[in-house]
Length: 442
Image (cartoon, rainbow, N blue to C red; front, side, top):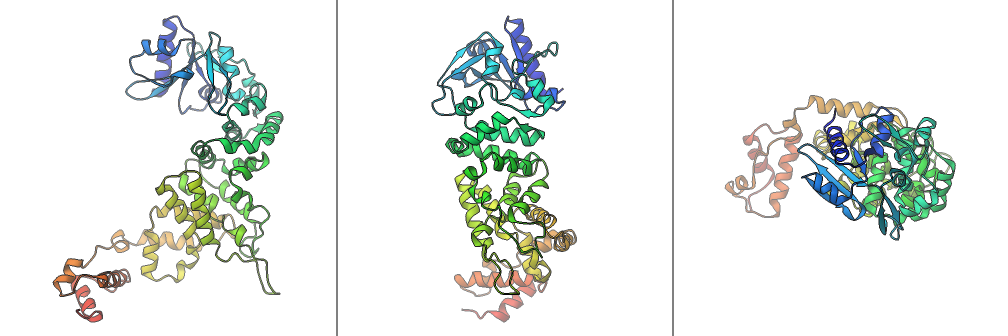
């Protein structure tokens, strides 16, 4: 039994011993019924936040105004929420005020989707289902609780969450729920960039990225959230390189191959690697002409940076996503690269992500993995000290040889590194000889 479940059972037992109702609630109940291991556990109770804090010595009132308290132990934590009704959502995210309740049914009716609205008594395994969640689990449906339009007006992020749950579980979005999303799709832009980024990243990394983005398209959310990706639809590509179809088809095929648990930067790099193609599309010219996307890598890197800034990625994440876009075509030149160029290429930060993006790019198009295998062999056969050799001479060494500090130092050190990466220098003596031969003392 996981530490989170042990703590959740302890919380429920102590609350019940103190005369309160207490149940597992939400996603953990859904996952248990699906025989999946929940990532975390939430508890719903009729005990007020003050009462919860009295009963448990280690608590944090993360949302006490909404009836939410974190109970912690040395290993994990559990969110404990008081049964409540939510009254008004002026900001489209938080309730204006809440009314505590003694009835679990009232609490269930305020939640988002039927499959997330069930409760479970850990003492006997009894499921409290006031919203037909078990029926929708069996039918494979994502259905909003109550009137879908009201649920989405309360919190616009729920529209994106409907897509994510449908993709993750391979479910359909119930028709009235889907219609409500389509009608309100434009309002998803009111949600904070950080919350939307988190949902989109989960869609990309939970193992069902293609399905998620097809559902974003189907529900009308895609052009609101990522118009640059929606613009890929119908943008033809040269069939000799992309027999699979247009840019949207190619991108979806790559998304389909993203493994569950992949890094967020790799996933976003895959999504955006060809984002520069729609604005740089040029049709064939003349009988021997072909479709071209001149400058699409440079345009794509600029667009990727703007998108990452819009979604408020960290600088480090932004740099990596943009690097993945900027360098994704370089693998085609790998067979002709000088040793020094190839070594510098594979020294890119988190190069394993560049390599994986290229592999997926090939598999989703022409299927030729020769350059991928060439680079992989190079990495396997080349000792790290050959890829990142220690510097043979420093600036201090150059001064000792009689060279004056200044801009020339950079030129000299660059020439030394180039020769070293090309295998032309073996030791410090070789380096000193090269410098003396190529550079006159000031």
